[in-house]
Length: 469
Ligand code: FAD
Ligand code: MLT
Ligand code: ZN
Image 1 (cartoon, rainbow, N blue to C red):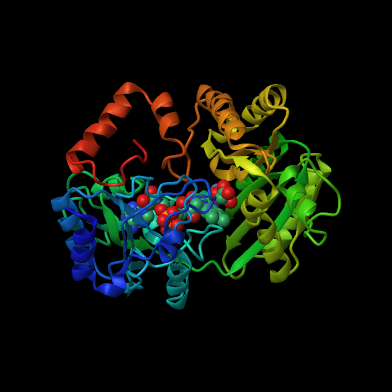
Image 2 (tube, rainbow, N blue to C red; image 1 turned 120 degrees about the vertical axis):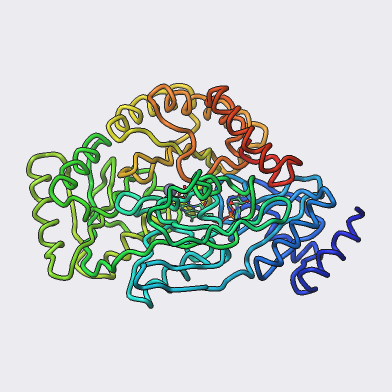
């Protein structure tokens, strides 16, 4: 079908306000958040309902048109960016923003896929409940994108990742049929777990249009602390001892190398520093509990003991909400500071927590020996064994040099991760960034199983081609 006829057909289905033809207006849909990928599209189509998504998918199926689903476009792996062919339609869920149902007895929230994560959290709060998925991009990312990437973030330690927070799903299949799996059930063994298959499939199997999300009780008491230590092993030792003392109350446990704070400090004079002195490693800890918990005092005591025993070097518990917010701003500002501070070779790896410290020692030594021009920016969700073990290069490094270094540095870091029983993709998705790496590290049997699923659900290969597989 000619592009003009396709665009006409799509605008007939979703209305003129639902299609973006103008290249200037399309621009923000065609470039990823990190500015690494840029593509072209004949049209960005923005349906408002599941019925409209279904009609769009049917037309694309009939005309052999490839489709790239997109939520808030905050993804870190280039998964929502179309390729350069100009043939792939961008299907944006950004107008599907309905909160469909709040059920405070079943503790569930049913939403459209295009609802922003921050709005999901707000709707839960208005119902005196808590939706715990939490990440730096929550004001821009959508729940559909969170589910498509099986997002993690900073509260996985206590509540699990996006998959574990989802009870039901609604998905439009590549041929336009709708699978209504919007069940708010905590037990459902009636057949294969299709919901889990679509979660984390990065738009390659279908379009997520709605979800039933699991709500938690509000956790009114909260304590936040910042810690300085000399080694990753000390940080892991502190995690183990706090979990022994506080159990499930440990909600977040994030680690940062000194370089994460240094890049921000190098960019502005007023960069906040949670501790006065410099430390090789830092941790941000959050505990949550019931109203009568004296969590802050108990955390202060636990950290004082850890300092006395030499596990850590220094610690400060936030005295008030403003100080706690400042600590979180420092942690969540790392991604932006990194974009401004250089060109990053990004990793999103996970290992068993018991192997993290040894991995960091080996990877630091290997990167220093083989890539002296790179500085390591190492941060992440240490409580989940998930690190963004990144390497920063100067902003003005020529593209060819950057591409060459990326290939060899990725290999160096990923080989160490996999040898130590880890994964090369923990929470950001494979997208186009890690597609080749996936092939290298997955066994032929695992690749074959995934390709068989892909062929069964999307025989014409129209769903997000060039991503993941
Ligand atoms: P998009 O970027 O639009 O899409 C991501 C992928 O999902 C693409 O493959 C796309 O095709 C697919 N997709 C999107 N919507 C749908 C749908 N409805 N149906 C089917 N497929 C779909 N991620 C974490 O996991 N943890 C973090 O801590 C974290 N912190 C971040 C901090 C910052 C500052 C930024 C910019 C990003 C961060 N991210 C983090 C990455 C990103 O926010 C997540 O991957 C998020 O889940 C993507 O949601 P999105 O709506 O922006 O999806
Ligand atoms: C984070 O943990 O801050 C994110 O996953 C974003 C990033 O890796 O930059
Ligand atoms: Zn992360």
